[in-house]
Structures are given as C-alpha cells and as structure tokens.
Amino acid sequence: MVDREDLAVRTLGPCRIDSPLAARLRARETTQHSVVEEDRVLFDDTIATARARGVPLEELPSLEPGGPRKKIYFDPAKTRVGIVTCGGLCPGLNDVIRGLVLELSRHYGVRRIVGFQRGFRGFIPSYGDDVIDLTPEVVMHIDDEGGTILGTSRGQQDPEEIVDALERLNINILFVIGGDGTIRGAMDVVRVVSERGLKVAVVGIPKTIDNDIPFIDQSFGFQTAMAEATKSIQAAGVEARSAPNGIGLVKLMGRHSGFIACYATLAKDDADYVLIPEVPFALKGDGGFLEHLRRRVAALGHAVVVAAEGAGQEHVEEEAPGTDASGNVRFGDIGRLLRRLVTEHFDAHGMECNVRYFDPSYAIRSVPANPFDSAYCLRLAHAAVHAAMAGRTEIIVGRRRRRFVHIPMPLAVSSRNHVDPQGDLWMSVLEATGQPVRFE
Image (tube, one colour):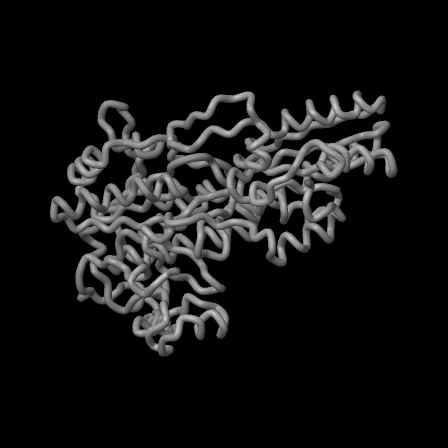
C-alpha cells in the first residue's frame, strides 16, 4: 500500500527567485498562471478506498500538483540544461524534446540547452558522441518526424561518469526521457549527485509504449500506438475473410501489459481472440485455445487473433532465458509459435487453414505522434520544466485522474501497470470478442 511517505517529493532547496513566467503573464494582463502549492491531489479516487485507510482526511496520501510556481529555485540566466532519450523508440519523443526546449527558452529564458546523443552512452567520453546544442530553431519542426533527433540506446552506464559529464558542462538540470530502466538509471545519477553535494535537478518524463508505468493515467505514445495497431487488425481481418479458413494473426507490443492489444481490439472490433500476459491460457485440450479456434473457423470460415508479445510465455521454449542490454528478460516469439501450432493443429484434424501473420511492432514505434499524443507530450514537457525550475528532483511528471502531478522515481519503478483480469477493460474485451473467460 502506498503511504504519505512514498509520495514525498525531494527538493534542492527553497525557491526564492520570482518566476519569469509569472511576470510575462502579468505583463500580458493574463490571469495568474500558477498552482496553489499548499493544495494536494488525493491519491485514492474512491471514498471506500480512502475510508479503508482509517485515517483523517488531512492524513490521506496525496500527490504534489504539477505546474508553474510563483517562485523558482534556479536563476534562468545562469541555468544550463541537458536532455537525454533512452530505451526503445516511441511516438512522441521528438514532441517532448521540442516542448522542453521551447518552454525553457521562450518562457523561462534559459540560454543553454544541450542534448546528449544515443542515450546514457552520450555522457561517456569513450563513445565519442558530441552533445547537440538545442535551440528553438533546431527543434522547430522535429515533431513532424518519428524517432528522436538525439538518438537512443539501451544499457546501463557508469553513473559516476555521467555525473562527471554534468559537472564538465555545468549542467544544472537533466531531463531524462525513458522507461523504468531509464528511471532507475536516473535514480543512480541522483544518488551520485547527492554524494558529491551538487545542486542538479533530475526530472523524468516516463516513456513506455506499453502503458505499464504505474500511478499515471496514460503514457505518451500509447494513443498513437493503439491507433496504428488497429490498421494491422483491420488488414488481418481482410486477409482472413479472403482466404479459405483464413486466420489473421497479429502480434502487438506488450511485454508485461496487454493494454495496446485490448484497446486496439476494442477500437477495431474485428478480433475474435485476444491473448495478453495478464491472463494465462491453455493451448491444447478440448478447452484449449487451439481447439476453440479450430471450431470457430469451422463454423464461420475465418478468425482474427491478437496476441501481445508477452502473452503465453510459459509455452515458448525455443529460446533460452537471457536479458538484453537494459537487463530486460528476452521473450520468446509467441507469434511465431502460434503460427506453427495453429497450422499443425489444423493439419492434425484434416482441415485446411491459411494463416496470415502480422508483426507491426517496429513500424508502430517509429511513426510520428498523433494529435492527441502531440498535445499530451507538450503538456508533459511543460510540467517537467516547471518542476525542474522549482528545484524538484528524482521525480517523474505524469497525469493522474486528469491532473498533472509529481511522482517520486522510487515509487514509479516499484511496480507495473497491468490489465486487471477482473476489471472492466478486460470484461469489455471478452464482450467484444466473444471468447471464453478462460482457455483451460
């Protein structure tokens, strides 16, 4: 259970400098644009959950609200900022970079912003990667492109060397855009910064196309990925209906969480089966997936199967366990396994089948953000800049129940967001597909 102490936000010190953002808004005769810092965003969203804690209202766990402050910690004219993107690609990375640079330079007056290339390795001299000066002119139209202009990489780097680079460049604020592995790396940087007694703010913008970062409504890029995934489901449906006993098989992103598979299925409503990591399933036997699929095709002539990449890993034995450069467990290819087993099962029963296999993962990761994600990325960037300029550190910014909030990094990596097998999202998927609750 999350307690008040888990939600405490670290700061570098008191904010004593008037925010230039507030001054600019007053000059334009605009309503004061700042958060009420004494206010808090309640962590629990239902009365029942709050009452179960058995504590007074003022003692309930709550989050620090995101947004601009009247007073800030860093003097913008003397502040130097670094930005780094890490891990796999995701729609919206360039949008976040652009939002950070424009907010820092135009509204706060920060004069030096640099980008570290190819993830955390960009800090390490032995790789020979130069930093990139990021100006409004450089980032002006990068949101039209997929990927990240800074490049990215996986794998840990020595936090001591990373902080050495921050010191050499006199960096006061570091924005880290990445997933849980990246956030853990950022926590190591904070630790070294603290040990050296430096005043450097480290703020994360969480990136996960799978939407598995906990305690936030949604991660950027998810809406785009879900929309792109529907195109593959639609294509699989066309192929399946066009071939004798046609089966369209689509493998989508989702190592630990099946959100993309679920939402893309609901959006397109062409799928007959959805397989996700959160719901184990039997392959063989009368109640298993293969037999249910065969009967479905025999009755109606076609079927569409959507599988998240992390689904059914207990059935995948062709690859020995291992990890990638980021320490993530390597998963076996559930799509390739299903394609083979489906064909073998139909052959064993003397039935023709035509399996059409779609794996759009890399194509989806590399597309530009759609309008929703573009707007969301911009707002996340604004929230991150406001937090960093106010001296907040070792936090990520995110939106929780429509409010932008600051979440301590240790809490953000303490668990994963999962599809609840008893929740309304999975119930909607079962209703849409008509598949059984369990394959047993």
